[in-house]
Length: 453
Image (cartoon, rainbow, N blue to C red; front, side, top):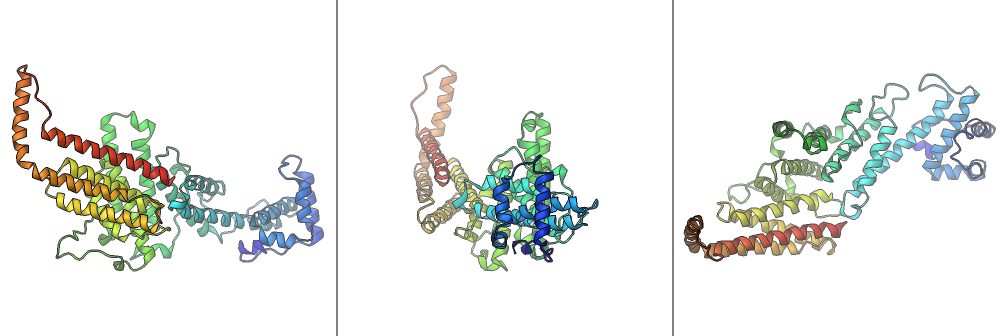
């Protein structure tokens, strides 16, 4: 029977005559006030010859059937005032177990929807999962009734919690379905989420809380109208919380740690350094979540972009990898590096940044190849090439730049004296080229994600 999946010890099936009585009582006592069922169609299934097969094949109908039996049972001395007791509760408990299974199925669907093939429905699924979790009361401490599924309910709720916080923040959604002030359930012990003595589930929940605070204090409508000093204080508060979160992670997996693998004496980090493939996913999810928030707070700091590109070698180019890790953060890091290279051509790290651009371009070329051209990323290799050509061109004309700077100083003096300005110099040409490159790759950014969605 389907309901045997929900309970370890399911209640015995009611005798046929008792089932008829309970269903009849339901329709007599409650149906007139809550007439959401088509009685004829429902009773055709309940009293038909294929009831057992229907219950075995449909969890939804099994939940509905047992709930109706429980409601009818209350009118035949089967109810009780205290939760967890009485025949009616035992019948209703079957439906509760199936509701939990439905919510867990929704969470599994949500994880699948985080990949490139389901970008259109992930938001709908997370909103429905959050709504269901709260409607079932999983965000509160379960102090009454059957406790066998307490930990499962709580772990399901907390996974939904941190997924909802992350997805809403990434999508710039103002409305969180799960309010932090209305949560009363503990975080259960989940041994399979503990790696190297660190509780990664608790870490993800803590990060979700930081995202919630960041949105409320920095990106909400009320935050936008606060005085500048309050805004800066809020930024410092979030950065301090984020740093405490980062410091609590195992030291050798701290996000923001550059591997410096371009130096010959440093051994680069590889996939073999992770004890389990699932652990690699956990570490990448933690690091990329951190990078995403840091980029938001720091307005695209360059060292974070470099860290993202360095981590790309550990990304599995596969359909199961979340799009946030597979494309969104690496693409943002690539564009940040291009911006920095073009506007800071004389920076001492320019050659290393150009090499990282090639690494990022290679990541996206491999992504296009493995996705069968579904992800249109090959143009990104052209941007890396343009940046390199720009630096070469800038280097060849470097002797002219000093002369141009002197000419521009003279020009400014002439303008101050009322003289007519001279024509466009080579530095202005360079600036125009840089501006055109920036416009081109920003246009690609929007077309890239338009194609995915």
